[in-house]
Image 1 (spheres, rainbow, N blue to C red):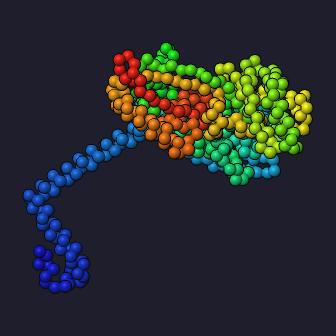
Image 2 (image 1 turned 180 degrees about the horizontal axis):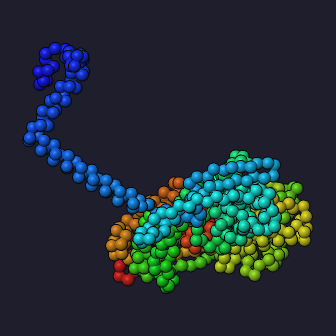
Image 3 (image 1 turned 135 degrees about the vertical axis):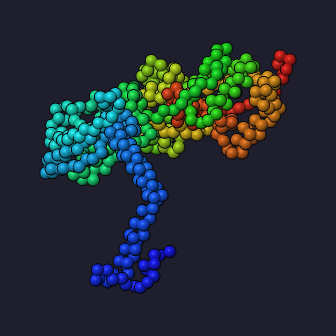
Length: 493
């Protein structure tokens, strides 16, 4: 309820003046507040509230001052080889020969303060990259190792250092991979942005990807099995076994990312071992190469075919082929004509190695002897490999005649093991094999694929042992056969 003052009249005269409505409200509020504060009970509550407020403010101020003195917790940065760039403002000085850039770089690291706690210390440094002429001078003098990473990347982008020659130039294989990773992700938009882009590339793109490159022995790669390396792919390697093969227990290494492949191989190996293991028979061993040659007419191509198919021709070619290697030995020749083109399938023993390089070398020399010493000077070599091999491609010739080592493997699986381990029966397994692996593959027009999934195991073993996984195409040509036999008082598969 408003005080009676505001009910009398819209105006009030004080000291000869007239108060307006707003002024009367303020004056009435102050008079009412004064009367209430003068009340003995109300005044005591006001004092108590003021004291509590002052105490709370003092405590909050104390806590705020204590927190300001302590360092804020910092997330530990991930390990990097160089300083992390927080700000980089290039100041280019451009002319026809010189491009200079200054970078402002902040380096942060953890240190220990006087009280033994860890604090984050940040230092600001300025680093000037060399001009283009200075970089070229170091490169010409054979001192590219002294260049900064961004300078090396810029030289690569300007094609002053070939991308494939980084290892040879730097003599630091891991650093060469790092520079290549950065260079392949940059487009040199302009001379101004070149050095800046190079600097940023060392901490972005591939550097933030999941492709690792550190702590790897690139010395075993360079000049051997890969070029323009930017990293490596780790593949888990498991083992299946031990599997009894020809009376010997062997662990089978398998590199794969296919879940349950090793586990299912283990289960199959357990069933096979229960029957005494695997017995194998190697019945063919010949790697092949099938060059294509061309003659002016089909009569000349026919003459060459007849000569190569003869004993005399084979002896000449074998002598030339075998002279190129201590291991490679020519075993057979097979020829086929297509117009004036002649395809020759060389089959040779290559020892313990796959031998594609040695057999290609022998084929090249044999063709040279045919051309220069055997009366076929008009023969033109089209290709050392004319796909009559056939290498890494599905082909009936490989399925019929084999390529490399051809092996038969036999195993007896007791009926009890089929039931307890494979969770099936002998009759059901045989029926499934006929309807799926044999009839189903025939319906599909399969070439060498009359099996469940031999390619899975072959590829995993190839990857684990460093073989060419593309050879899986012909290496997994396989037919699975099952029979019911009576052995040792019980039926087996």
